[in-house]
Image (tube, rainbow, N blue to C red; front, side, top):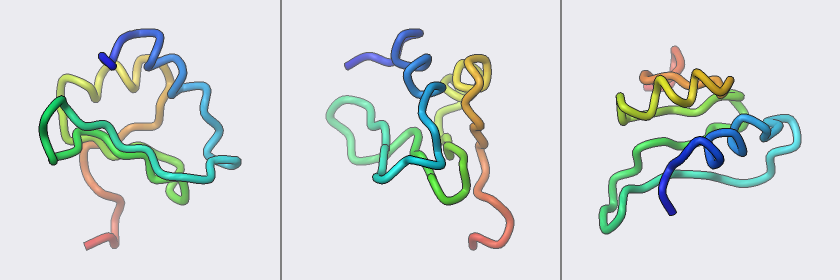
Length: 71
């Protein structure tokens, strides 16, 4: 699956309040995630700078750094 505007819109429609699972995005054939939903923080942690802007544009609460107190 390629990350496209339809997929990003689907992410934006997710409700973190009713989210019961994990969601991580991985590039093909790699073991390093590029984005991971953190439901209890109501945000998506993003490692890929090219993905951060598009996620924010569709209303996904995305950060490129972990919340305070995580490490």
